[in-house]
Structure formats: structure tokens, C-alpha cells
Image (cartoon, rainbow, N blue to C red; front, top):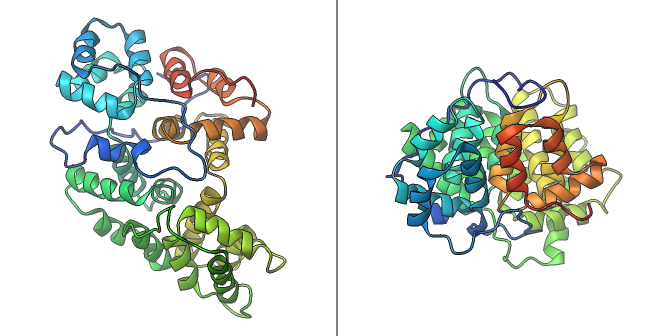
Length: 359
């Protein structure tokens, strides 16, 4: 049963795990808004609800109908939901029983700690035959160092194995090298000093490692820079790189790693580099494109839409909303209204915040 006006994309159940009150991951440390995500735009659509009393709200939940509970959860930040869940004792059970046949995936996802939800998506990405590289890259290539560390803790807690060990088994070649480097959590902070001359030097290194060579590419240079520089630094590097030759950075990555190679692991590495590059250049546009793709075609990829709304509403969903309107000629709110109905629509529109006056 789906509330979407189009059928849900045929995927396996995401299998959201039960909340673990003994998890080592702090709900405050895991809050996206507190994880250093301030560049290039901090544009949330969901803000902390003022005068929130976790104890009072936990009691009030018992008297709410389904529609009131949907709006209640979607109007509180994740940190506030975690405090309410702790005060209530069985919010997970309440949500699952109330919504077992009605937008359960979205509601349960909203009450997951962010790191736990990301760990669950990574588990889904590496389960089955092969890996879902697009999903894996979406999570790992867009998270801060703090978020990456919390995800690793949550994965260990929930699935009983180190995340690095699992990814080491599932990935190969240069792709594995890049993924493990990201997992190390050594990306430079947004506040790190980085001069124009350093950006030019890194841009030249990438040029010399790829376009300047007559045969092959020195992948290690790409992996080191894209795996360790901050997104702000990568944006500076790309600006300098695009002055060096006929191909811009996006075209160079596609050419060097995807178009002229046959090795699957190298192509996957190229796709990860593309994710980092696109996210660094414009996070709002990156998410807007993903949302548009999820809503296009004969079926609606609800998993992707739910994941982006729930994970980005406290960070940059506002930027995604603005970019969506500019790219596709209609608002993100209109997309939600077209694709969803009932309580799912109510939850997503609440997460999206008040209607924009202009996009």
C-alpha cells in the first residue's frame, strides 16, 4: 500500500532497525546541525521547536491521533525527537504500531538518530549481489568527519562488525582506496587555512596526473586531494583547474575514470569522485537533481526522497528547494504535492517548512 500517486519503486524493504537506547552515538553529536556543516550554505527548513519539553511532549503523544503525530514529529528537530524518545521509553513501538500500514518508513526514519539511519542505508547499499555505489557515495561522500565517525560507531553497534572491514570486503581497487580514505575522517575542516596559491598547486597536480599524461592517469593524486581536502578547498581547486585547459574538472573525471577505462572498480572510483566534485561545487543543486531523478519516470523512488528530506532538512534542504525551482520550473513543494498524498505528503511538506515566496 502506497500513498504515492505513482507506484513506489520496486526495492527491498529498507528494514529500519529498532532504536537502541544504549547506542554509543550521542544524539547531540549526531545532530546534522551540530556537525560543522556550515559551508557553502547553511539553509535548513526545520529549526528547533521553541520551549520544547521532552517530558511533557512524551506524555502528550499518547493523546495524539495519527495526523497530529505526523505533524508533531516533523516539526521537531532530530535532537528534540531523540530527547522525546528517551523520555517516552517506547516511541519506536508507538510509531511502528500507529503507522504499520501508512507511511511507516518515513515516520520510523524520522525518529532514528542520523548516524543510525546512515548506517542502515550503508548496510542496504552493501547487501545483496554487488553494491549500490550511488547510495554508498551519497552517504559517505557528503558527510562531515564527525558524521563519518558516528556512522562507523552506529554500524558497529547495530550490525556487529566494523564498517571499515565490511567496506574493505565489498569494494576493490582504487574505489576501495578512496572509500577507506573517506572513512578515515581526515578531510580538512572548512575553517582550515588554504591559500589561492595552494589551490593552484593542487589544481596543477591533478592536471599533471591526468590530462597532461599521454597514457593512463595517476589515480593516487586524485584520491588524495578529493579524499582529504575540504569541500570549500575542492571548490577553490576546481575553479583554478578549469582555467588550465579545454576540459573542466567534471569532464576530466568522466574522461579519465569512466569513459576510457574498462575496469569496474575504476569507474566506481570515478563516480565517487564525481559525487564529491558535484557536492562541493553546489550542495543544493546536488540534492535537487537527486530529488528530481527520484520523482521522475513511472515510479517514485520514495526511499531517496524520504532519505534526503529527513537527513538534509536541518542542513541545506532550503538550498535544494531553491535550486529545484530554478532547474525544473516548479517548486519542490509542488513536486511533493504531485507525488504524495495523505500523511506522507503532510510529513514531507512539514519538513520542507513554510512555502517560499519566490524560487
